[in-house]
Length: 88
Image 1 (cartoon, rainbow, N blue to C red):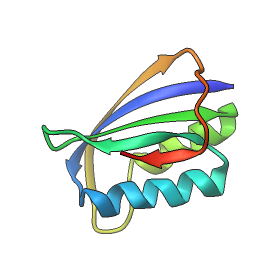
Image 2 (image 1 turned 60 degrees about the horizontal axis):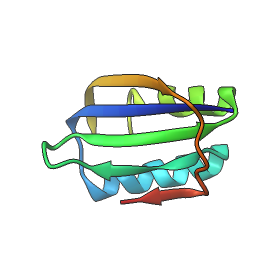
Image 3 (image 1 turned 120 degrees about the horizontal axis):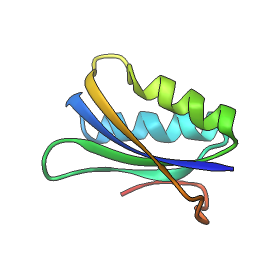
Image 4 (image 1 turned 90 degrees about the horizontal axis):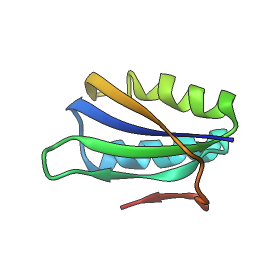
């Protein structure tokens, strides 16, 4: 089990961007959350099996259609006890 915190910068569609994260996380079996920060960036936590979390990070590098990701900061964290995937 691993956990990664991401801060995503780019031209992101807010709620639609986070909803697409929810769908992808459920598809891959990743737990965690995503939120839109006041500075316009999206922050997300992914927790799960290493290959699933890595797949989420790879997917986040391009994001859903019509969004443009310019950078992603990835920080390794100790696994917590996330349940499901939530949008905040």
